[in-house]
Image (tube, rainbow, N blue to C red; front, side, top):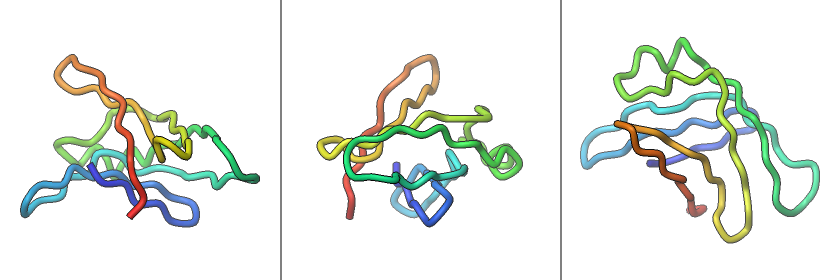
Length: 88
């Protein structure tokens, strides 16, 4: 998975060798001070419903810590995992 954050949007895609599939597109709230933080992203459900792997959630909880980067929970086929990112 790959997450891209802009000024007010977070977009997450499943990335394969030659493919990209949208999983999440929603709001991003930048932190107001340094350190760990959490935010609730409001999903762009219209964008996600047209993607086979798009989330069906209206909102998603995200966290940021220095050690884990941005992270979130994902459930597929009955299995839930926490995805952790690294800034590149």
